[in-house]
View 1 (tube, rainbow, N blue to C red):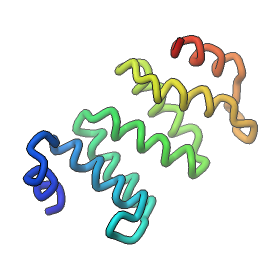
View 2: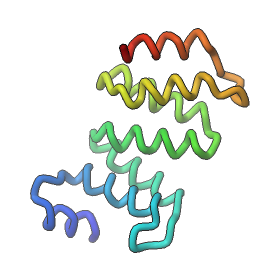
View 3: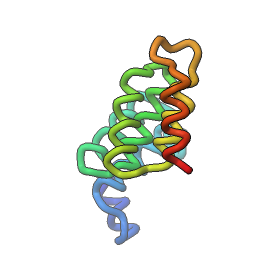
View 4: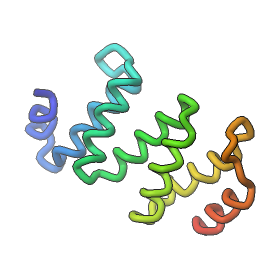
Length: 116
């Protein structure tokens, strides 16, 4: 399986990190056909194993697909639980998305100030 191969090649990579790597391969089409659904699946596997970077990447995929509610849930969890500044920045962008019913400049400003 690809996870074991990645972990064998780089001894510092955890199982969760290997799933994130596979997700990135699918998202970017590195050596394989680009497939956003598979990218989300593998980011989700990494997230389930505790890799908040995988969680954030899954949130980014949801955001890009226009699935703002699921993106918000993920970004909020990683921002609050891991003090992840990238997720906080993603929340600012998300809350400023005019086409989303959950858009809120007040929430965007809150997360912008959390970054500072």
